[in-house]
Length: 174
Ligand SMILES: [Fe+2]
Ligand SMILES: [Fe+2]
Image 1 (cartoon, helix red, strand yellow):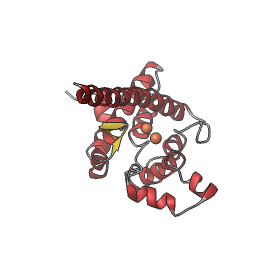
Image 2 (cartoon, protein in one colour):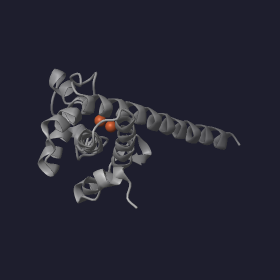
Image 3 (cartoon, helix red, strand yellow):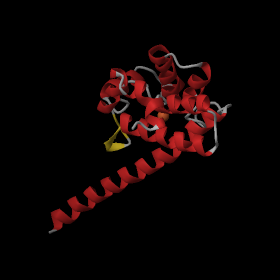
Image 4 (cartoon, rainbow, N blue to C red):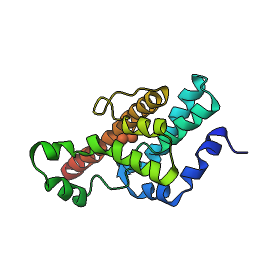
């Protein structure tokens, strides 16, 4: 039988534009934007349930969390680097992925899935303190879940890079 989480998440998770996120690497070679987004949504759902939020608010938490990184481009790509490189000084800084992707994701989420203003605001502010401060419980939960999940993923990725680095060094010495 379906879990409550899957009932709330299914229409987004099965959508072709959300499935495209499987093709974008995120925090390390083994982590896609899809993997990350689903992990953040599961974690945000667990927090919402622990806080005894209403079903409607929990659904908003799940939708905003699933789509918080729905920016739809590969931020490691040469194409994105060239785009930023076409600007200079403060304009280039302002277009750093960390600053812009929350707003881009919110716009795409609204256009593709018709998210509410509160859900879009949660997405646009999830990069706090690099973005404006969250103002709702939904936004705080998405921001917190993203930080926790991203920290775990980046720690794992760093461990993987260190292991392959040492294997190369010791392999060359053996
Ligand atoms: Fe993000
Ligand atoms: Fe994220």
